[in-house]
Length: 328
Image (cartoon, rainbow, N blue to C red; front, side, top):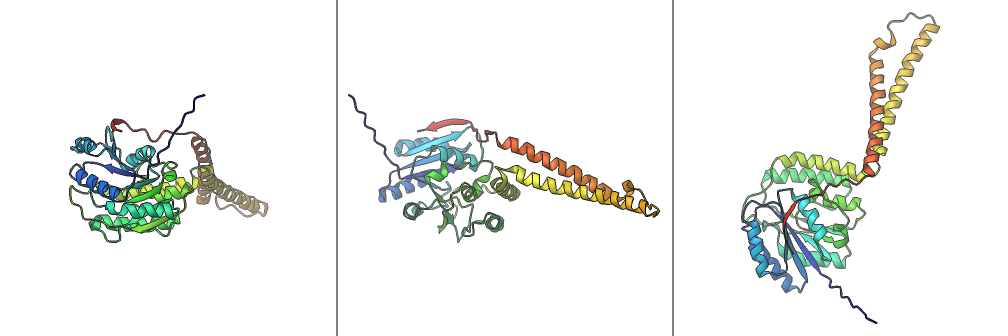
């Protein structure tokens, strides 16, 4: 009789770093993370997601792999965005705690031990960093404050000041059960809450001035942020039951239009029965066209809800990304 023994080695931490054209900062960042991990005796992996960089980032990562065996990396064939990078990284991460940080050295790896301790000891699902003192320009900080205030109000997560901070810590079960697509990385705490992970806290973290490169922030993200916020609110509340939204609006609109039409007809019949001369036909009254539009709109909304209900029952493949290279 042959007995097979299997041993499962638990990895403490997966550090996930999405990047785009950050070749100058990668060596310093990797050495810094390695020092922090060794000082705290963590078992770990460093997972780079190269989001289609056009500089020497991938060549630098390949050189770092020769020096640091804990480095893993995935390179996209083209630029898909931070959400795509995080989604792929979450699928690949093996650590009990997953920590995300930006590659530009504005996040400090010295925050990692405390983030790990709180996730493990306080049994938290997610910790979001709060850069109370920032070094970003006003063109970035003002939109950030507006969206954070709106997100707190719409999501009900009142204890977070900065939803979009790149430095976050997650319990492994969280990243394995959420989907990040489009540009939804700004609202990962909201996605996690809608998925049932409600133990969400905040930690004040250091925000360091940019040392290399330039910011990737553009004004287009101002509009995209608003659209993403509305999208995540709708999907979170009605994604599994779109008929509740469209159907309710449709029924109300249809009933309003029907009531107005019946009222106009009833008034006309009453006038006829009482011998009152008709001032104008029903079809000549503006209220008739309002009633007609309400009935048509109600029918369309109801049908939209029905079609959305059918679509929601399928499983669209939103997260297909072409991977050019991997370092395992």
